[in-house]
Image 1 (cartoon, rainbow, N blue to C red):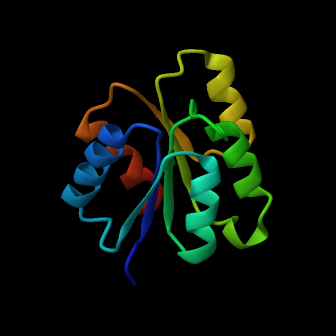
Image 2: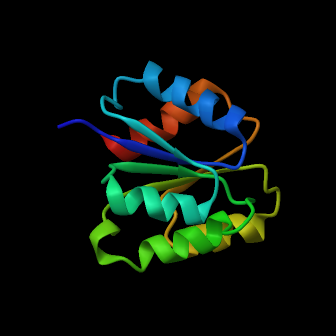
Image 3: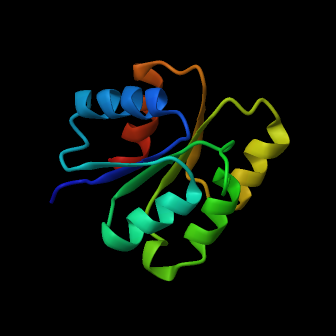
Length: 124
């Protein structure tokens, strides 16, 4: 079965970089969807089931933490891992994301190897 992914980040450049990294892994074999904030992400998820979500924390309209809380409140999405990818340096914010149901996090700037390593632990 193909593994579709949703990338949620207000930076189009970061979304493209993450999409490129995902395409280099052998874990992601399906479509890659993109959203610029949590509101768009929820709209995408209602139309397209995914196997993984990569989300920034700091975004306009609906930030990553609010998105994560809304995402986790939907029982249909409970088994889907969410990795937060963020510049957020505050350990408190990262812990808040983990407590809200994040499966893990990677700090920006990241390397392709860091993303691959995190996905290997989640998807295998």
